[in-house]
Length: 201
Figure 1 (cartoon, rainbow, N blue to C red):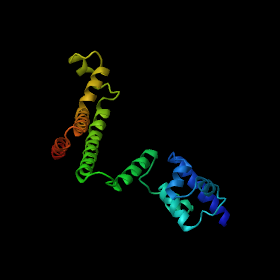
Figure 2: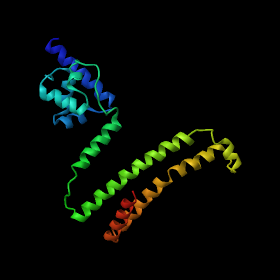
Figure 3: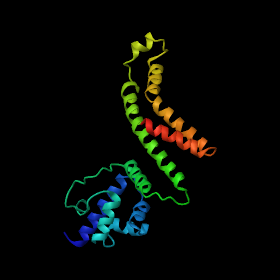
């Protein structure tokens, strides 16, 4: 394969993957610390995109292997399948680099404990949400129970039962709201409330 053909292949694969992830060129440019126009030219193969640093930068930004970009393999092994996965990974990456910046030690500790609680509750929510969707979303299974228990329809029964499945999560996020509202009045008490919630988990 000529250098020109390789540049075209790398460019077309980089563009294919970028579009698959729903990303714009500006996003990739920021990840690689270059201009958007440079990404445009990498994708068209009009400038050299075969250099090791460029290939590694594109591979990292697009979550593929250098080998896939070069056409040496047809499979790229990645946990990132869409834009949402990528956004989550970006957010978690930023959170791990979170800086204290003008927060007192206790304020920073509170913010991190709050994040831990939110994430642990999200995990619990996912379980109950999955269960609720499986049992009650659009299901006709509860038809007889709905009738027996006095519901007007199976739809109403399913709505009530679905909410019952995720009640724990609704309550947890209400607790977060209460703690945040209390923080401005009495930060120590609010932090104690949060610590109690964390100990329950």
